[in-house]
Image 1 (cartoon, rainbow, N blue to C red):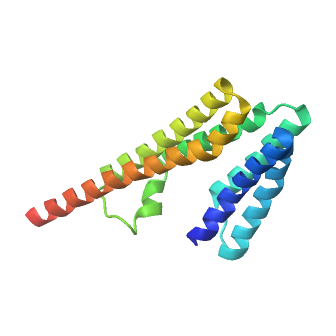
Image 2 (tube, rainbow, N blue to C red):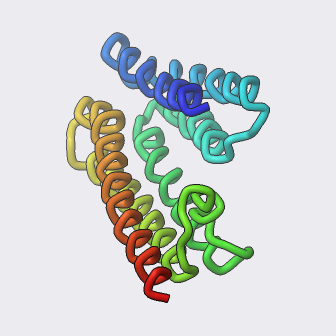
Image 3 (cartoon, rainbow, N blue to C red):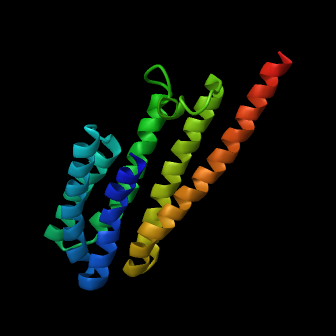
Length: 186
């Protein structure tokens, strides 16, 4: 269910932020390293499915979080959203060339009927979105204070995602209406 997915994906981020403002980056990293596997396990128990993106995110938190703690250097953790977003971008891009259909079509084909080139265009929009999200995260991490990055991780990346989803929804509505008009014209 969507509510469960939201809870398991955003509660660890909220725990991270609360831990950060109460104990600093290393305490927050440890809290996140505990919260992510618990969230993943909760999601699996409820849905009986493995969310591959959440699994990848959890593994990155554990590996990069451990490096952050071991080397006492938060830069490893700063890279986590960037690495995850860039890996997802690669998977989406690869899906246009490997397999029967792009990933975005597999995700949304019940919600929309599009032509092959439109699915490819939508998939490329997602590739660009993930590349941009990863790039903006690492830009903020290296050019702004740590506290700003922590806030950006929740509010900025979430805001960028919401804006992209709105833009994508508008584009989808326009394309779907055009397709329907073309079918009526025959």
